[in-house]
Image 1 (cartoon, one colour):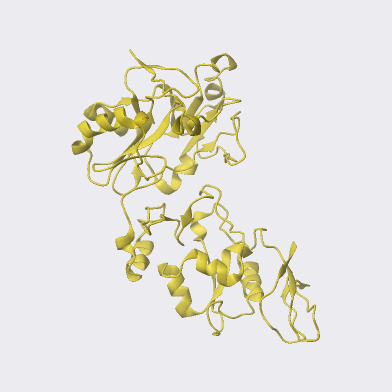
Image 2 (cartoon, rainbow, N blue to C red; image 1 turned 30 degrees about the vertical axis):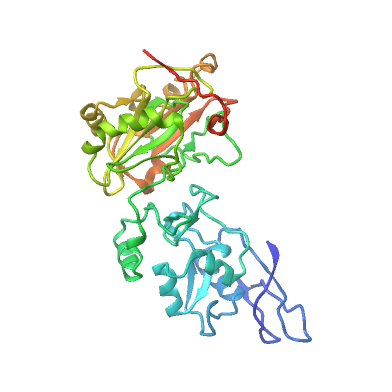
Length: 378
């Protein structure tokens, strides 16, 4: 619980109650201005308390006009959150008209936060702090173009975005999701995320593959980009671009192939049969193909898959034993995924990684002036 400024003038005797406890109190009797209120900005709330506190903070009035508030709007859709997203700083009091504009995304997330006086955004853990999102979790690029997020193909989302006339702003580009660390991963950094439970893997067929120390790359029928979708040139990407040009015509429209560009040495030197190794294929509905189907497509397109370490029913002891400290110099770690197909929105529940202790990201160094040393093809 923290003290925050309050934006509305309220009657002198006004107190807002939640569970019979006062959460707001008048601080300035002279002008009846509620200068401060004590509210749980970053605490997870119940649905009922979320509505009560959002309305209380905003004086029961739409933050965009003087109409009475009729809805406690989720600034970022609650389905993007693993816990429902019932946080005060993810709520806004809106009238019917402005609620619709928020849902259609003709009112931006940033505009809603500004109207509420929210200065420090709160976002779901699996989203990126340095990206701008619309209400439905679609990334908005600097030029106004939007990338398809995890809820893009949801029928209601499609309908409301069409109603707002913004579907034409979307490209078929998709940013590769953030991969959560496995609970026993040794190489966590401050901005990383970790699986809190492995229950979703128990009893399931899983695939474990070598985690390569390269550059995440995505191929479409008409485009190629690294983790950032800007597709800027770098000489370490020339080999992969040439390889992609030979298979691009065989990639179905709006499908994408994800893999590792291994041309340049980072912190590990590899002997390779190809400078591009694939690890997933996504169809035009943003579904990651099953591992078996993925391998079939890799064979068809002559793509080398990342080395597979395990294929079987989830066994934590066996999977933990796949990495030993003696492997540190030659292995970054491994990636675990469900063998079955899964939707983009399920990625954080279907994929995890183990990273060696002390692993150092080298991308910034070789991208900005460090001499490129190719790995060896054998």
